[in-house]
Length: 125
Image 1: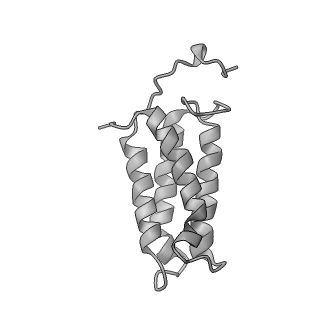
Image 2: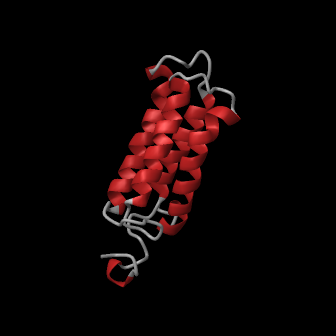
């Protein structure tokens, strides 16, 4: 069931990606270790591949929406598993699990085809 439009997903991408980047300082785990760097790196990556996605809020529309959604799910899996993969679960894990689950859900619940037709968008080459 794809209940999230690609346009709404685009907003979620930029907001969530930015939130992931600043989350270590908001939640107090900015200790210069993997707990801090995982959400920063995954957040920056999400913003970058959103910029390149062929959907309503993409700026350089080269990445197909299904590939973007696959990257969201994979990134979410890494985020959920990161506290145990990088051995910081004894200190902090809940933000990573929540962020990852959110990202997986957004990837699975979003429509795979944007409403905007490539040939009619003003920024498409």
